[in-house]
Amino acid sequence: MPRPPRICPAGVPLHLVQRGHNRARCFTCTRDFATYAFYLAAAARRFEVHVHAWVFMSNHVHILATPLQQGAVSKLMQSLNRCYVGYFNGLYERSGTLWEGRFRSCIVDSERYLLQCYRYIELNPVRAGMTKDPAAYAWSSYRCNALGVGSAMITPHEEYLRLGRDVPTRLQTYRELFVDQLDIRFLQEIRDSTRRNLAIGSTRFKEDMETALSRRIRPAAPGRPRKENVTPTPISSTGNHDSDTYFLQAPKYDSDTYFEI
Image (cartoon, rainbow, N blue to C red; front, side):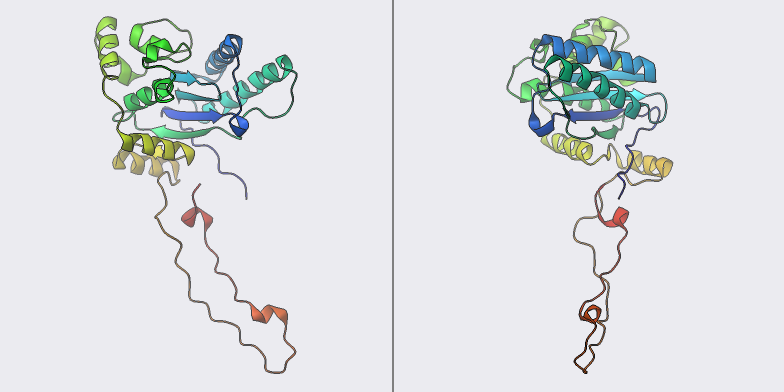
């Protein structure tokens, strides 16, 4: 069964995650982080993707981005991974895969959830126990969004720009978002939605996106599929039985209806 394509609609933010194969390290030194950032910035410009937030951990990455063209994020990740794996394998004299399959992603409701997604990404080092202050971790976008450090890779989202009329006000307001911890329900929702390539946002947002994409982006109903009534095939009394008559024919289900994507 072919894998469903990633949901990458134009103009809609996506939170995406790429993890190392078997949780192996993908970055071992400053040069690795810098090289990955260089390739990401280059691919974002080439495929017209606006990157809003990111964090590069030792064995995985999180990126929040908005593609300007349909499917542009998939092209960006394909190019980024090809370039970086070539660099990594060549430098460390290794071969084979570096990443754990395809990237995982979810589309994000910009009106209500986008800034929470910013926080989720940039607080990764804090949740991992690496630091108590996100500003102390060099390989995330927090210093750009909260302290005004310049980066050619970042493009502020409209929701971020609405935090203040001028840069100082915007930076202060953004820092204040990090005073409180993220709600545990939001943490679970974004992790689950990203893992399953769904959507995070309001019910109206999800309904509108499902209509626009002609595809389910919400979890299927819980529970096992209801079995259909199946009448068994009678067994002949002659003693010479066709083996097929001993088995019931399994009901056929639409996999898109009953199973997670």
